[in-house]
Image (cartoon, rainbow, N blue to C red):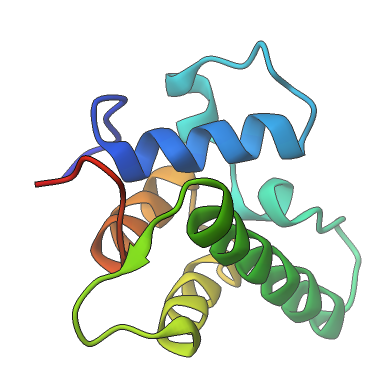
Length: 115
């Protein structure tokens, strides 16, 4: 599935990111192009350990926001560790964008109102 504002998981991800980055005027399509280095707050020249730590912290923040703020539950056969590790795989790859993170998020969580 492509980055879609009508998808609850994608919309929740966009909402979290624009608030977390204090960039509340950023449009949906614009945010879809954000690179993972920007998303996790990784600066060029940083160590691989720093990238890994930033990616882990961000994945944990996302999980907390989805399950607490958005009241999402995990999909069948998914638990917190599985969800965080799946997001971590995307967030750790500097060639990926928000759109690459969106579909895994959708497959990991069931948001209120999803069919």
